Image 1: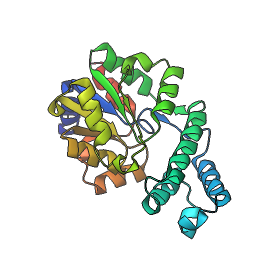
Image 2: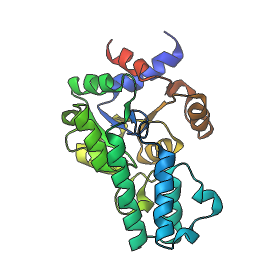
Image 3: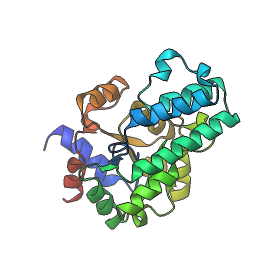
Length: 235
């Protein structure tokens, strides 16, 4: 066994609590309801409100709805416009949950950890309602119970702020030193670090790998497939 696999195996097998990001490690939320379409719909709605001036030209062409929501929140924080825009994004996410693409082997990983009695939680910037909808469609809701911690009305507390991880740890009554997070973005890594939680990065492509490495992730703690995690859990 290589030092790389020893390190990874130790993180996976010693965790008593596991916090999983949603869009990435569990599924591709916008696989069947394209994110760029959602972005365009949000921009069109802003135009109808006469508020498209809040966005730069580049932001109006954004392919990620998060870029639109964050841009408006920066310039119009906590206002009614942001509240309604966030609700429209939630409705789009609920639609997307019906056609989301499961991350290969993720269902098996969740069920394997649950069968071992590991405490599980979702820690995501996505809507908790959309997350619960997807988990219900996959029959995974009982693996997480009430421990789905997603976006709130306070957008300043989205990852990389550790808020959703701290809520998950408190809900599980978990010591951070006994917890592991699996995420696929630098914001996940930063939130885990701020919370004192160990981190394994799911990097399904070279771009994701490079982003996490640049952010300071341990290269020995990156997996390109959730099959690697499932293999360890099956030992």
